[in-house]
Image (tube, rainbow, N blue to C red; front, side):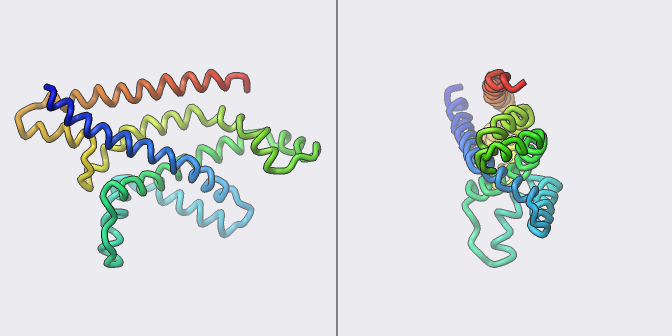
Length: 211
């Protein structure tokens, strides 16, 4: 029992590392991509939207394999470390999803508020950070929360390139005739997503003053 728990905790650490690093890099990158998709420069806007369309329209598992195996097979370059390839893939994938959420939040703020800020002599950056940003955060918390929970579960896909996350660790016990460690992994996922749900619910209530 103790050895199984320690093994699963080892896999859980990998899962949490992938989850944390993805959010750390994908959240700001997604905002940058959203600006590109709303750019007044038509070629830039079309390129960004095409990239987002491709990333969102293809399976994450396929993207993991392309990032890991692609450089070696196409350009004869050394393969990325498995965990690094997983992080890069997840960051790009989720940044594209986050960008659409950001875009919806930004465009959901009434234009009149930005126009009023310009009339008052505020710069565009001041309007964004002091007028629209907090309203955007309020609008995007629910859809972002859904993506966070999905991200926790999607981390299991890295097993396709032999990154030993928690489900991989649990599956190793099947060969030993033990099925219950797999159900044990579900408890870890439920705990993580339960904590995320509580934190996001608390944060959403904190933003209620924008109603």
